[in-house]
Amino acid sequence: MLVFTRRRRQTIRIGDGIEVQVLRIGRDGVRLGVVAPPDVPVHRQEVYEQIREANRTAAGAVQDPTLVARRLGAGRE
Amino acid sequence: MSHAPNTAIAADAVAPTDNQSTAPEVITFPKGIPGFEACRSFVLIAPETESLVQCLRSVDGPAASFLVIDPRKAMAGYRCELSNADRDRLQASTDAPLLWLALVTVEESGTIVVNLRAPVVINPQRMIGAQVIPHQCLYPLRHVLVPAD
Image (spheres, each protein chain N blue to C red):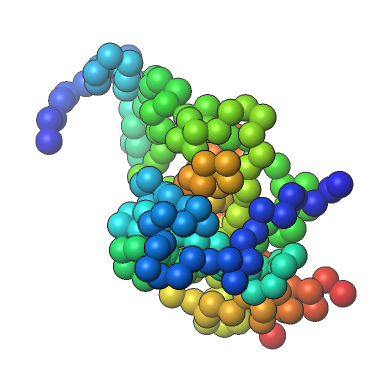
């Protein structure tokens, strides 16, 4: 892993189109600004982790579409 | 017409195991889906036509199966914009009809929840799918559809 020391308003450049700038340094966190081309998805790592976890739970659960459809229908009446 | 075009594949239309790779019913997920990155091919199975809940099942890699529902049937007024990058991933033109699916989970308590935050989007013309995380529409990751009994 590359490690940099950056101060407020300083930037790291990645490749041709990605810039990560330190906007604010607080006691609890660092606020970053990311500039990236539209085809580069930028997400907080936790979002990916949450979705991965939700997918694993979904795949591990009961898989009976007819039963689920019936309960959904019943819930709407 | 207010409901989605019926692009579901009937259960009896699913290809037999010996020619899955060439069957048009197989939907390719070039990057798998998060947590199941090794699953690149799925089929969509409906227990009956016009079924509210369908099953998205992997046909390669580790066995994986998900219950899915049209997100607009899970939440009235659900509306999501696909980013250009995601549209490119699906090889979909701007006006291409897309099939949106939200993953349903029956939790151990019996509560039925749906993931509206990260829908699965399929381009039926190319049979390419992906789970997307749209920036502009922050729907809940765990939206309760039916509370526990």
